[in-house]
Image 1 (cartoon, one colour):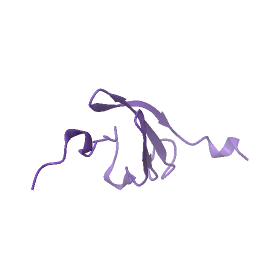
Image 2 (tube, helix red, strand yellow):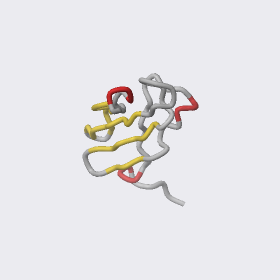
Image 3 (cartoon, one colour):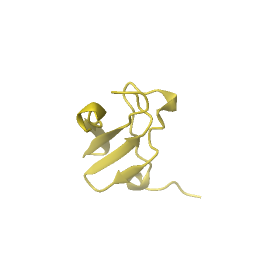
Length: 77
């Protein structure tokens, strides 16, 4: 059995300041330039409020480019 080529290896997307119960990677979308990683139980703004981590490809690695968090629910009423 041979190893897969480097282009096929699984990328790693760290969850900065994450906790085990955050469920980082619950959903993932990847194209050639960007990857979005869902973290549905992140406590960033409120308990289990969730967030999405946006990574940008840089050479052979992925760099955290942005963090998207939900709006304040009290402002959405």
